[in-house]
Length: 113
Image (tube, rainbow, N blue to C red; front, side, top):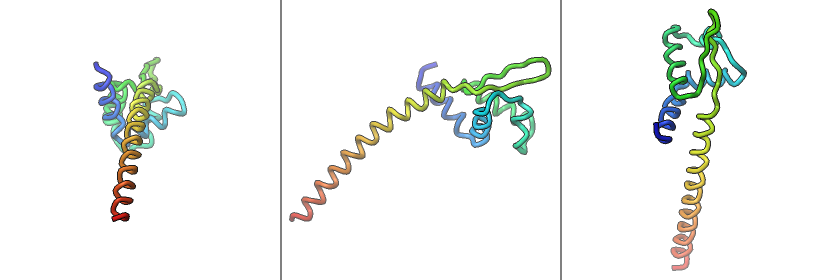
């Protein structure tokens, strides 16, 4: 999968508020699927679907030990997203600075005339 495709998968996973809430909870450490499901008023299959999306995006790792299914946050895809945003933020800021400069020039010309 190309880097931009991987970013698309991660951004799509992050687009859902339930999945973002799950990731926020996992920042505290590995958690069982049951504990992750507790705060949500949705079925276990719905939670499992959200977890599958997060796992496919590489954002979580799921393990099974006896009857326990545990999820762990993986930050590498978030690092890639952050790097992409930082790169583009720099480009956008540069373009906004150029636009501000151009608007100042136009304003000075109109006030001189």
